[in-house]
Image (cartoon, rainbow, N blue to C red; front, top):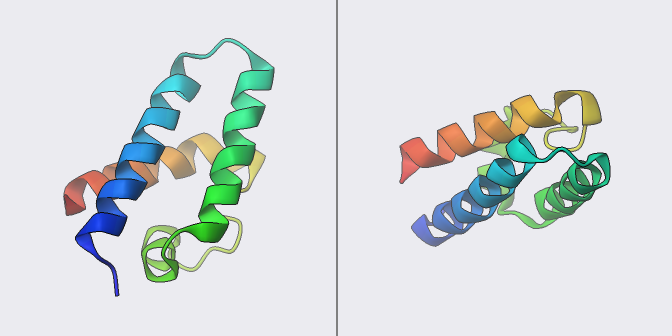
Length: 81
């Protein structure tokens, strides 16, 4: 079951990390954010992650797709608030 609390928590966390990621000029900082979000994806409500990822196993974990994934996640979560 996807709860309002899980949506709000995921949105707040991912939104904040996305804003830092978008404005960062430091590669190490971006790498740290990618690692943190990848770990978070392992702990997020499984139903919510499935909804966001459309079943993609590497969602929020693929370096090449990370910015697109986190931007997508924030947009979907915002629409669910």
